[in-house]
Amino acid sequence: QVQLVESGGGLVQPGGSLRLSCAASGMIFSIDTMGWYRQVPGKQRELVATITSGGRTNYVDSVKGRFTISRDNAKNTVYLQMNSLKPEDTAVYYCKAGGVRTVTTIMDFMDYWGKGTLVTVSS
Image (tube, one colour):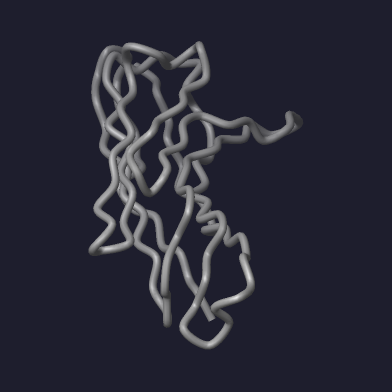
């Protein structure tokens, strides 16, 4: 089985910064796309940023210029550097690993989610 564990959430003042990390573990052969999503109670989960194994990135418009996604393929880890945080960035942030192949299911491409980490932006 593959597990994703997020870390780095917390309380920060508006204008501050946080760095989220998500490490995937298990008998992983490869991961296609890794990304961050966020969800506020009562609303749908939304994409924040994604990054492919080749380093191609994609961001939701509301975070462009403030957030940076990066990835360490050797460690199966994805990061989200969040700067100039705003109260509207408050949410539970979830990590997703897409197109995961394991050494035992190498012909299957599966998606996995982490349990989430809370980011609160407030003064």
